[in-house]
Length: 132
Image (cartoon, rainbow, N blue to C red; front, top):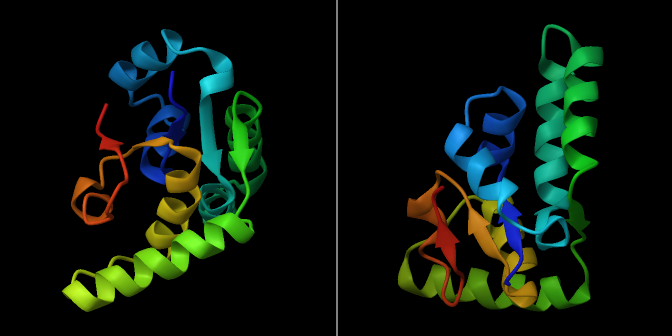
């Protein structure tokens, strides 16, 4: 089974208990096949720091991340980043910087990105994207 990489909005839905369909699909997925990106972790921690109760928000993020592998942005991801960025710039279809970093982490790992942000991620060549 391919890796399932949860984007920030999917993680937020799980943290807030507002993603029952996603939770059902994840329950049917082997734990070792569920992951996220270090970039998603950074976005979640940014949100936790801005919340009204940072301590509680950090605890919720930590509980979620305990259940998945975190893929790091490494040299291979950097190669994909350069390729994706140049390709999207040539076609005039740029995406946000963090989404670009997430895509560059997912693509070399053959991970399917689970997101509600289909519009941006679908612009990335050879990236599998789904909304659960």
